[in-house]
Length: 143
Image 1 (cartoon, helix red, strand yellow):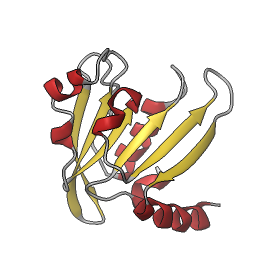
Image 2 (cartoon, helix red, strand yellow):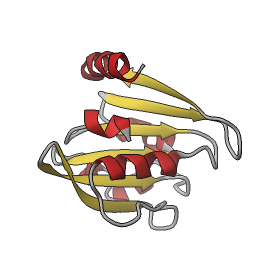
Image 3 (cartoon, one colour):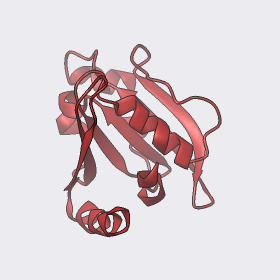
């Protein structure tokens, strides 16, 4: 939920973790921060869910992708993954490895370690100079 306050339109967040690690729970926290009414659910079978929310008073789309079922990178084009990378959208992508070549260079990587009843360790990594600065600012406030 805290991360939601640092996100803005155009951001891409790659969510990495084993099955059951909490990637969708993480997306739910972001949805809550955006004031999204109703549940943010796993798009495991539909692959993409889209929600309307607000960040700091501005409308934003939250695009939540679960690409676990994709077998080939080309399938991402067919389902419109590239269309989601717009200035009015924040994209949260579970299982992003399959579309590595489609992802913007500047993105935040969130790796969630642990599953089941275990405590989670969450590792934030910046991929790109813009996120490096924002991540430093975020960590100063959160830690």
